[in-house]
Image 1 (cartoon, rainbow, N blue to C red):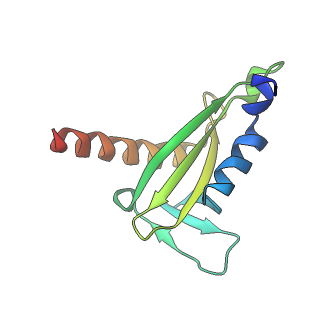
Image 2: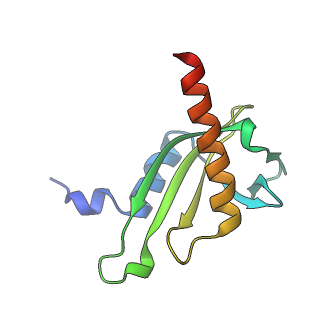
Length: 113
């Protein structure tokens, strides 16, 4: 049986998400989510993407190693991931964008009820 901590490593989660079709890498610039490392240079506004899932990782020996990996799907079907530190070392542009996406998702959930 595989060790639970090993299953939850960032690399293993990224590999699993990749097998599930989350193959695109994203970053945030100028308030938009951009594809990186691909032939198609696409960008998305916060209302054009959904956070499908997220995974929080904590450094075993160093609290500075804390990060969150987000699985994201765009309205046009592009699926990928973006990671960010949390706490002091978080990228504020990425945090702001993902907060907008989360807030929009909460609004959609309320409208569905």
